Structure formats: C-alpha cells, structure tokens
Image (cartoon, rainbow, N blue to C red; front, top):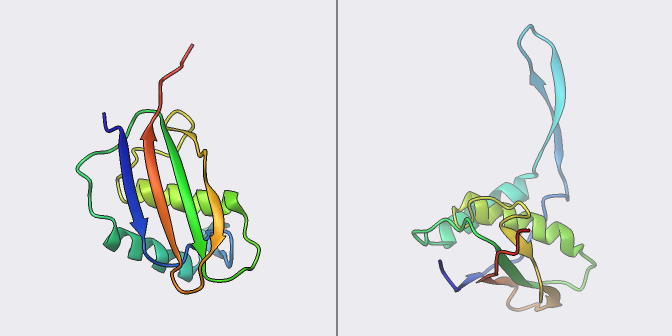
Length: 134
C-alpha cells in the first residue's frame, strides 16, 4: 500500500459538464436513443492527462484521500464538484485509481480552487486512509 502519491497536471483544469454533446445512439432493431457524451475540449484534456501521467505501476484499490489544488487561469466561477468529477475520471482512465467510488475515494479533504493566470495546473496528493468499515 502506497502512503502518498503526488501528481502535477501542468495545464488548466477542465470540467466534464461544460459543452456536453447529445448524440443519438442506434439500438438493435433500428430505434435510437439520446446519450450524452463529453465535450471535445474534455476529451482533449483527458488525452493530455493520459500523456502526462506516467503509469505508476499500481492501481489504487484501497481507501484514499484525493486532495486537489486546482489553479485556474481565470477568476471565473467554477464548481469544485465538477472539477473533482473530471479529475477522478481521469485518474481512473490513467489507471492510477481502480475506481472512483466511495470505497476508494473516501475523502477530498484539503481541496480548493485558486487563481494562477500564468501557471494553471492541478496538484494532486493521494494519501492512504484507514479502512473504517463496520
């Protein structure tokens, strides 16, 4: 079990919620139903993250705190929850976390959003937590 892992993603954080797309998916039998997919900007962000985050050789599958310091390039309001959702999905996609459910990400203590016009980034510290299942 890893006690602490630090990752820096060196570009502006992006949420999944902005500019989502609705497409029609064909179903067996010829019918269609709408599905929501992430925006082009989020897909590009996810790929850049995959290129940046070097495989750690582990998939965290135990309780952790994921502290994220989001340094935004503007002072525009942003929802911390939406930033967390995007980051957690990226960490799963990059195989740092096995899943982003509440049995693995048990806390996001210490996370915040700040302003850094010249150096937007996300600094992530993943710390092992005690397993307090009752």
